Amino acid sequence: MDLLKQKIQSEGKVLSNQVLKVDSFLNHQIDPVLMVEIGKEFARRFQSERITKVLTIESSGIAPGLMAALELQVPVVFARKRKSLTLVNDLLTATVHSFTKNETNEISVSSKFIASDDRVLVIDDFLANGQAALGLAEIVNQAGAEVAGFGIVIEKSFQEGGQSLREKGYKVESLARISSLENGEVAFLEELEVALS
Ligand code: G4P
Image (cartoon, rainbow, N blue to C red):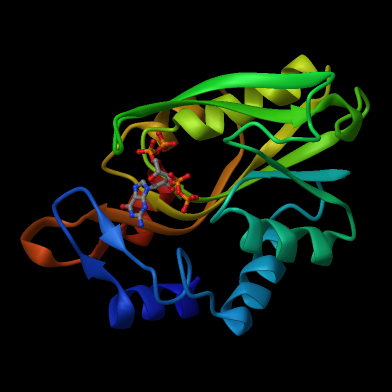
């Protein structure tokens, strides 16, 4: 998605060989115009998948998840990372370890909001090692529903998450795929590499 790649090039800050900072439009301040376009692009890529629900995780997944859900005309539900005062019964839960942050969270969704006949599109802002994505898939499986695919805003293809999800047979659509953050520069996966991956 060219608009997103341009935004990453112009506003992204490479913090290390592993981490890209995009807090001016995705992780802190949010660019609503870009989010609308992101929602349209996810909807286009999953239009034939008969999606009935979007599932994402707080906090940075909510904006792209909401926009995708709006375009697909389905509800969006977000997994919580912290226990909610009111969300106590009938929880679907999964344990997610973040290698980037070196912390483990139990994520949860009320079983009320995912039904066994749902076809779920999982949306997240970043795909790194894939732990959040796998945790969300586990929650969908616990509900007896089906994961129709993963929509990712920024995939770091040099980390293992994308490959491991694709090897499991999931449809993974990433709007920007970064092949390297070395030497302080963002390099995107070339079209040929995308086709072969
Ligand atoms: P994984 O789920 O793919 O295994 O990723 P990982 O544990 O490494 O990521 C943990 C958190 O760090 C996630 O956000 C993820 O979106 C974010 N993250 C991973 N790599 C990058 C990166 O290069 N740049 C930025 N900006 N974030 C990255 P989170 O803790 O859920 O935060 P938030 O959604 O509350 O903002």
